[in-house]
Amino acid sequence: MNIQSKKALCQTLLWFVVFFLFTACLCVVDVKPTGPLQSNIGFSQLNNTVRLFFGVTPLLYMATDIPLYIAMVECLFFACLGLYQLIKNKSFKKVSAAIYGLALVYVLMVVWYVGFEKVIINYRPVLLDGALEASYPSSHTMMVVTILWTGILAFKTIFPEHQKLCFWITVLSAALITFTIAGRLVCGVHWFTDIIGALLLSGSMISLYRFLLVLNRKQEVKATL
Image (cartoon, rainbow, N blue to C red):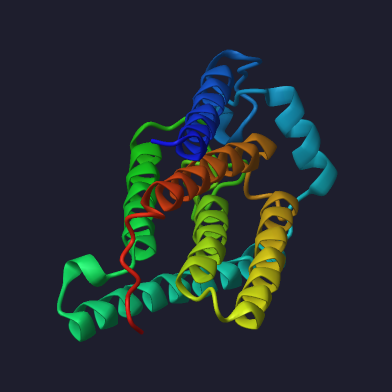
């Protein structure tokens, strides 16, 4: 690995370390039964203060589903693009490494989602359908931020000649990411630390994807579109 690759790897490891340290702190710092049905919540004073300030907004909660649907469409687009490159070039080697990297990130997202559904750190501050649900990290926020941000990097890597397209993809993605983060925090269905955890985990996976792009920059075979 060259210096740039080592730097990208160190940044990725640092993101993951910070995420796991934050998660560990959430399990031991100011843990009190202040959630629904007396469920334990880490950083309880901070979380309850933020929640009481914003309250609950069901309409905003539903509106934040829109960016996730758009992110899912983007996932489908890259899957179809990879399949198209494979069929046209008749070689797995000629499928853009950027798409393979996305596939790895998407798989990791599923692993994290399933893992934190089994290992529950915090429950939601509200009951959905009368039952407790895992809340940490905010999987909705994590998926939107990760998919759209890695999508920005992927578009710039795969379509470097289409600068105007990449610009508008970046603008739209940034707007959707901002709306999702703010909306999920303000709507009241997550604790403040759920959003922070989601951003740290997203940053870890985005950094991992950037590392993969740097690592494969010299080896990548440019696919013919």
